[in-house]
Image (cartoon, rainbow, N blue to C red; front, side, top):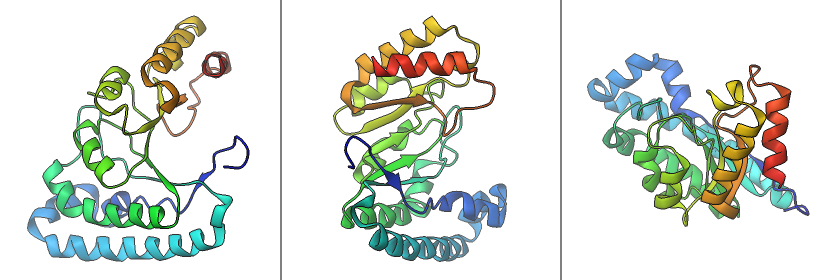
Length: 217
């Protein structure tokens, strides 16, 4: 760290999305069953590019960064986009290579993944994820109470402040109370932020300020 500044960076590598864009999402999922060798070949090509790009980036960055931050949205509001079994075949082997490279280079790993990904959090921990972002608060099984009870000693958490309803429609006092609640649950392993990768335009500055002030207390 540079003083009290923690610096995540790296090539984002949302390979799950790149391959979905290449085939079209529905075709991608169908081809996992009908043409698995083709899916593996395309995924291998995409991930190899990003492995080499990150090798060069990490070599140049050295101790100027602290963590490799990348994202793949594996979840919907209610569950995973594909089964854990399909992820184990088509996602995890490549994912593990990216996290291994980051750890070998001396960095923590932060994963961005929207949606309900509760069912694969143990796998993500096993593959070397150190922190999870953005904790989509209203997605199934992603409430802070459950995450704290099941993974509180194994992961750091970034996010968790509901941006689907609370930050949009809530009053500043409601937001402050929710920040305090999540801080109590997740403690020093929490970085407070909206449960999205950005502050969306329908969040008022007043509510954003309430979140930030409560986070600093």
